[in-house]
Image (cartoon, rainbow, N blue to C red; front, side):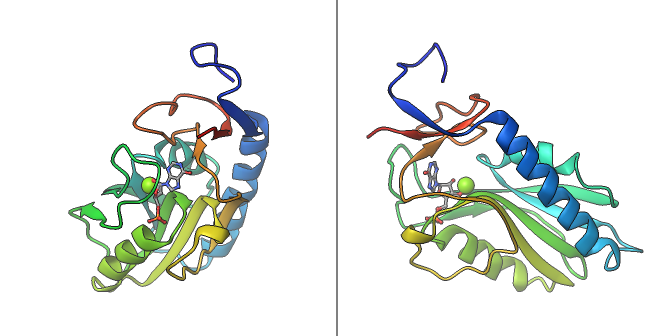
Length: 180
Ligand code: IMP
Ligand code: MG
């Protein structure tokens, strides 16, 4: 995958081209679905940092209706490969009466997105959708209703395209499985 890392450490799952094609499809669906809802106020994307930053940047450029963007910080992993179970959320957002779409990298146990959703719902958005690049349904412990999913993945550890292991591999253009 990348010369910087040993070649058998990461098994490619989705190439940059495959990711690009899928993101265009999602951008089209979002543009269609929200076209009637957002004639006056734009669609408001809230990106969950850090893992979703590359996905969000690419997705934003495929959306053809007016939209705005903001960011939220959530972390539960530290330098472990399994979720620590406590989620730290940092934000200073205004969502009241706005059509909000959360942009996430992976929904794994569902804990992070469930906590973010609860916090945002308390601020009374006009609507709240979830767009996740990856979904690991086999790892789910907290139910999540995902509005847009890029790809379903097995319950393995994924890196690349913004997604890290201990802050590494975010720069890889494709998505792959990191061997344990
Ligand atoms: P959850 O709270 O268990 O759903 O975990 C969600 C967050 O954990 C995601 O937003 C990712 O940041 C991180 N995460 C979950 N699975 C992976 C993975 O396979 N690779 C890297 N990060 C992951
Ligand atoms: Mg994340």
